[in-house]
Length: 415
Ligand SMILES: *Cc1c(COP(=O)(O)O)cnc(C)c1O
Ligand SMILES: [Zn+2]
Image (cartoon, rainbow, N blue to C red; front, side):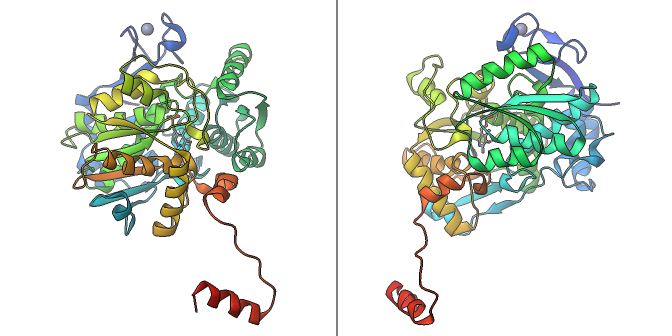
């Protein structure tokens, strides 16, 4: 048996399709008819139990390949994705005001972000389906991760990024040999252009919400967190939100484990956005439908004015009894310094937003100080040196002279 997929359900009209009837969205609802992969949990249960995890020698995300519906055949040639560390904070839990804090460091993936989990699946699916070229539009990380894994597996890429994408991510695209289209516009406009190109040229579509397999890749982060905590995940899991695919994936992973009887409850999910671009938070607070927002934040990866996966993201927070908060750019910069200086982890702004969000939620009484929380640190700080520079003071230049050094250190009170 290849996999446990039962069908592809449209999240809008509820119609169920088979694997061979659909590639992206629901044929009758169009682009908004985002599909969800449903599994036969009764069959999966017979195969995926605690023993399955204990005896599995693969410590990458591919240890779960049967749970995400990809074939095994090409996996040995892939880079190692996932299997990232989950650290218990040594110091930082005190700064955010909670008893126990865990940090899932997704910056350690091959291209430096959680997006590798989705791009890996996209590349495998493109190969399974016989495509030669794969395309997406991205604020940066989906782009660089796709370029990375496509390069490894010999697929061509056509990748659309808005001109504001951080330099580290653009350099990754060039080094991975991608065909980069840098669009003179924001992410919304970049997305529209990519859509036209994908329709016209028939590339394989890695646009996050549209491709139902990508959430399955992203859910592996939740499967890992649960396993790393011996199937007793923390009370809360905090994750930053742009399009909403990541938080939807996190929910799906915990949901699968719950349906398999491997965890007793699904953690509450805290969706964190930047106050410069917070359409989900606004819709939650005003109890109104999601409205387009401006894209105005240093956290480029979550600066998404029109989220592409609104239904799944809102449902993830709702069903988990979670909440939404927004954080300012100043708070993000402050927590970039704290995460680096107190735990030795360098995150990009969007990755650290989740941490600032935990602090905010504690302040607002949403998270209680006695609850345990996992933050998903979604992206590596080296990707965005310009914003890292904003978070700190540059070092002082001293003369190449020991006396000058002595004076500098004694002035600083270091010696
Ligand atoms: C993409 C991304 C997110 C948010 O994921 P969405 O699916 O867009 O909600 C958060 N952090 C980083 C670093 C990302 O690259
Ligand atoms: Zn539909």
